[in-house]
Each structure stands twice: as structure tokens, then as C-alpha cells.
Length: 429
Ligand code: NIG
Ligand code: FE
Image (cartoon, rainbow, N blue to C red; front, side, top):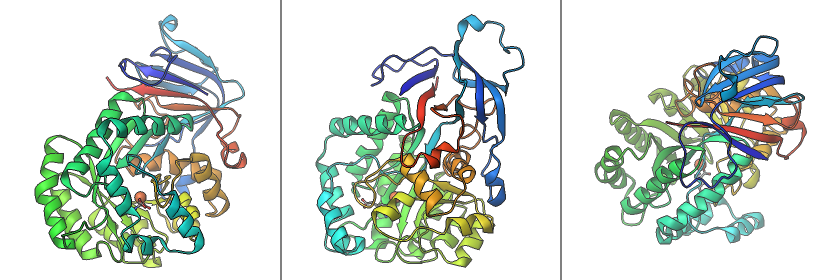
């Protein structure tokens, strides 16, 4: 696996070595999968990958400056300033976007995994003070430096699987100090590592001791969010809208307020019990409603009519031995769907893009085209970034992956295996 950098900004403490120049001409691309578009694709449109055979892409200063075929002249006047890559026999796609993870955390929960395999439920472990609460304790005790080291190694794994943008949530501190620590770690990692990190404040991941649901919501709104806003530590806020955590009414109150403050809303919705989280997400114009294992037909309808992306996390259902979300039905009803890993130390200790694709294809009945759309342009839309990433279009960031194989169809077919040969990642100026 080779990783190349496209762009101008030299990142001093990058963990990568052997990065290439800033400008690229990638030519003779057997299959150029552009996923062209600037907004989420709904329903049937998820099958349009806008493929160019014998394609060529030019990246100038980290930005895509040409997309077309290789039969035309090389469209630059100074080709000597470009690195030329011959992609004969290869497919080229936009970099993958993992739009839902909790990758900054301290400690592990391997014992909890065994308890679950024995039959304990995810919620019963949390109710007896384990689960999320045990990662909260561990994360409070882990230093910022340690979290950065852990983060770098986790990001390296993601990059190797073709991830060029990742969303990361806080939510393993609950108190102001540790939530800010997690967000500051992500801000630092964004500078240290080529992957772009989009940060989400998930203070509403659980109710900490000494608070009621509502007094904790007040604490987040009055004590924590003003600092996050001032220091620009997050773009989005998320909440675990679930029976026994935050009710739909409490989630509505929180999310409407954070929207007033200028944050985008995301929701962990209808994961374990149906609480109308999908309907709430559509009603308030959330960027995404995530999980949705228990979504109702009404919830699916509401999402289909809205701009909210339905983000499905098949590796979590797999790890929890739950049934999969109704992906096929959602697309057929007209939803815009994204796929993400949900990488976290509890419900899904995996950041595997190949496993995500395999499960979506085999058990959620997505076509290979839909799976690709769900990890690129629709995932970008789930982060409010479909205008700048998620497709190979002129003007977008030069974030691309080159597969080992001549077609995107190898992604689900090469089950659970990494098909990514090379990642070209643009750095921001
Ligand atoms: O998305 N469901 C809530 N939050 C995470 C799991 C967090 C954890 O178990 O640590 C999820 O699955
Ligand atoms: Fe999650």
C-alpha cells in the first residue's frame, strides 16, 4: 500500500514517509468511478456512479482540475511539475468517507465482548455501570498525548483502507474537561495526520452520575458548548436518543438549541428501541440519522422525504449479533443512505471498510453501486460536505483511491479484503 499526498501543505509531524509531490496526472484509468455530484443521492439515483472508461484525472495543488478520458491531450501546460501515474488495469474512486466513528477513546472492553457473546445485552451492561461508562472512566484517565498516539495509529489503519475523511465523536468524557480533551485531540490529529477529521460533540452519549437528563442537557448547553463554539472544536452535535438514555423530547430540545448556536445535528436514532428518532431527525433537519435498526415504516418515509441521510452501520449490528438495518427497503423508499463503521471500543471495535461493504452487500442487499455511493458522496452529505469531497469532480479536493483491481465490483466480491492499492490525499493550505 502506498500513500501519496497531493497539495501544498507540508505537515511537520506526519506519521507517513515517502509521500510524493503535490500535482498528479492519473491516466489510462481502466475504470474511473467519479460518483459525480454535489448533494446526497436518494433511492434509485444511488446506482449512478458516473463511470468514465479509460479515464484521466488531474490534481493541481491538491484540487481536482480535470476529469475526462485519457484519449484527449494532457490538459496542463507544465506536465513536468506533475507526477504521472499509469492506472492501467485499475479502478479509481473518490476516497472513502467514514461518517460515523468514536475513534478517540482510552481503554478497551474485550471482557464486555465476551459477556455479550454469552448472552448479556448491550444495554444491561450499561445499566450496571459498564459499557460506555467504563470507557468514560478510562478516557478520563488517559492523557492527551496518549490519546494522540492511539489516534494516529487508528487513523493509519483507516487510511490504509482508503479512508480520506473521518468523522470522530467525543462522548467518552461527559464532563467538560474530558469532552474538550477529546475534541482537542481530534483538532491536533487533524493537523498531524493526512486524513481530514470532522469533529462532533456527543456529550449526550450517556447521563453522568449526579445529573438528570434535563439538568445534563442544561449543563451541556450552558457550560460546555460555549467553549466548543469559541474554540471551534466541533462542527456537529450528536445525541444518543434511546430508551433509558435521552428521550425524543429531550433530544429535540437539545438539538434545536445546538442548531440555533450554529452546529449541525446528528442523531443516534432507533438503534435498540424505536423511539421515533428517525422522524425527529427529519423534522429538525439533522444531517443524518444513524443506526436505525428499529426504524418504523413511518420513520423510513419521513427520512425519504427529507434531506437527512440515513446512516447505516452494519459492523455494529454484526458485532452485537443484531439483525441488520433495512437498507434495501430504505433505498427503495427513496432514502439517501450512507454507510459508516461506527468504530468504537464497545458495540463495534472495528474500523473495517471491507467488512462494512461485505455486510452491506450480503446482508443488507445493497448493490455494489449503492455501497460505493453510500461510502462516498452520501457519506460526504452526512457531514454537510458534499460540495467539497465525496466525488471526483473538478473543484473538489484531490482525495482518491486506486484499487488493485479493474472494477469497483471487486470491493464486495473480494470479501472482507482490502482492495486499495494507493491513496492520494490532498492537504489543505
Ligand atoms: O454508536 N450506541 C451508542 N454509542 C455507540 C457505542 C458506544 C460504546 O459502546 O462505547 C454506538 O454504537
Ligand atoms: Fe455510534
